[in-house]
Amino acid sequence: MATNTLITPTWVTKDTAVNFKNHLKLIGQFDRSWEKQNWGNKPEGAQIGDTVQVRIQQRWQVFEGQGLVQQSITNQTVPLTINHQFQVGMGWSSAQTALEIEEVQSRYTKPAGRRMANKWDQVAGAEVYKSVYFSAGTPGTPITSNKTWTDAVALLHNNAVPDGELCAVIDPLTQSSLLAANQALFNPQTQIGSYFKTGQFSGAALGVDEWYYDPLIPIHTTGTFTTSSWQMTSAGQTGSSITVDGGGTYALKAGDVFVIDGVYGINPESYTSTGALQQFVLTADVSGTTTATLSISPSIIPSGQLQTVSASPANDAALTFLGSTGATSATMAATASRQSLMFHPAAFAFAMVDLPDNLAGAVAKSVGDASTKIAMRWVEQYNIQTDQQPSRCDTIGGVAPILPYFAVRMWS
Image 1 (tube, one colour):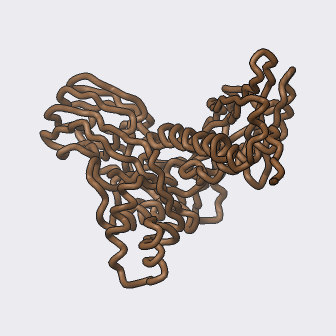
Image 2 (tube, rainbow, N blue to C red):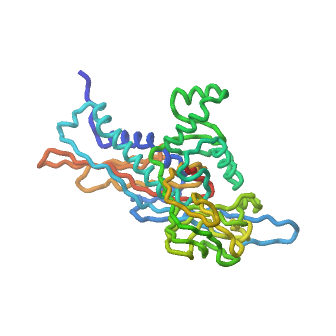
């Protein structure tokens, strides 16, 4: 007769953590370095709401000549907050601790790890996509051309995103379209054969180093407006807020994207125009009629170390919203669109921290190490009245967009 494995908190925590890690899709590609730098030496982990300011690297301008041009040191920071604690609660009797290990895995630890990973992916996608202003594709329209993907890669490279490490996390329908468009290619045969056998578009292709599919990709529904000819109310506007007029009745949504005539993006390394109109994203909902004050990202900065655009907008410069019918006498209907993401890992941060496991009257075990980068706690406590051992598995962490211009939203 086979010997049963004791179902200890240590074993359960490790097994759940392994399944958690193996099922991370989107958030598994985020930069994980910030947790060690900021919370790694904190003896009791971090409390919910604990925030650090992540410092972005300095941007320097290069000047020609022998005369010194001293530049100011500008410390740009982005808040990263540990603001989510997720748990899976369960319980079993003391008699059930004699179950075979395979039964415990299939019934409890594997589903707990998988569901915890799905929750983090779902929350992470919803929280970071609205910060990304670079966009490709058309709202509500499936992406069927490889050029849409390669143009998105070119967009990132034109904005000084490093070569290598680009990944794409896409929804299953978009993956299906990619497979249909590429299975008929003649080369490379090995890769096409892999697509055919696995039903997954993966590996290095179309300028992207790794492809992943995730059914939990967020969906953005665009705002709406009646017949409008949006334009700037005055010349020389800068900063993270602009005033516009020419609108009809509107209800715009955070995450909506638009361009302004004559305002081009710049390469953050060379400070030269990319030749493409800079895309802006709304950072707050706004509704009304005729006139509007729009909160936007990136900020309009036409010169200096933190320059983002080639020039500030001219008076009456036209705005064109992604998903609208155009710039003049245009309308926009609410359109739901999947928000697949192509990005360099440095675009987003994901941090987890250890929860305390010295809990009075409970048996607890935490798992957290450099190799898995997982912080998970399992707690159980025996109830003598019911012969049950209520248990819970907890994770605590947070996500943040650190360098949103290292990412592109792929609308479909």
